[in-house]
Image (tube, rainbow, N blue to C red; front, side, top):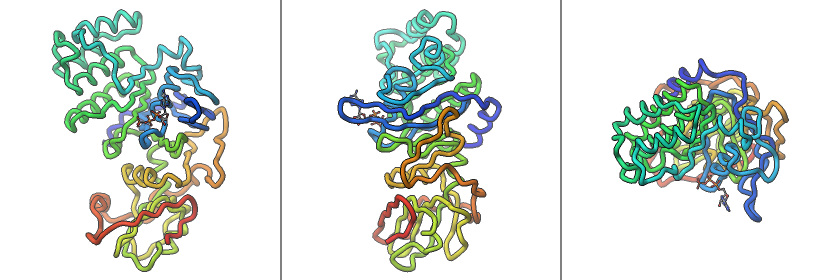
Length: 366
Ligand SMILES: Nc1ncnc2c1ncn2[C@@H]1O[C@H](COP(=O)(O)OP(=O)(O)OP(=O)(O)O)[C@@H](O)[C@H]1O
């Protein structure tokens, strides 16, 4: 699936900036939901927005769509304030509850969409999406399944011809087959119309191959941002036989994002400072899912803002201890054996497992 997104994206990627946030913060009463959020999303990307519950994903989408105003900092969409009239027509925001009128039929819903969006309603697109899902035009929205409602909501969103589409967990609650169909629909439509998409999702395994850009939030801040390939390429997954209490020093010499030690084996995701030394262990590139899981399990691991995600208008303010961007590493270090990723899915032994070691800086497992 990765190549699918990359191929579709390649032709429409440009140097333009779709979204740029600088020091963006939102506070609800006494608590910050999002703070010091700085990143750039280039146009034409399919960006995964990932983070644990309460990380601020919905808040960020609302700020980008202009639904909510920031408490501090700024966000620009196509260089403009998102709440302004000219930016607003270029943005579609599908919130988690996918607001639709249950008493209207599908046909009435599409008619309403046309009436509310004069001059920029693509009826052929909406009808095509509805027809491909075999939705009856006479069916009442209240009787549709979750997947059918999602399809109708996406039909409304794409028919508005947005240049930026913000989707808040559009795949939640759908069965795997429907998720696959909706994802394929999303990729095809985004490719056809050149839409920049931000897709919030906790279905980590399904983001690989769909998204070519990554924004990971945690604790109300940006933890990872940039091209998926750049971010993955800055890390290594190392696994081998355990010999002692700690990780081998050659591996612990790299900043350890997360390490797991079982009775006989260790696995670690490290931020590579250079090639990982050869030794009695295997080194591979982590999959997107492995990398995301490592960061989600290690909330104190250092943030990584790739150069591709640095705003043009202002430098990224780094938290103490965080290293800048990706240090121009050669990709991949020593290659792992073929099929390693598949094998990694199951634990390397069945001994009572696992000790998670989280590091915020230099690794030295204890
Ligand atoms: N309207 C609101 N009033 C008060 N607090 C809010 C409001 N909306 C969000 N919050 C708080 O802001 C924080 C971020 O919430 P947000 O919904 O943006 O996170 P999220 O990453 O989308 O979470 P989830 O994955 O559960 O949807 C949470 O602590 C939440 O309780």
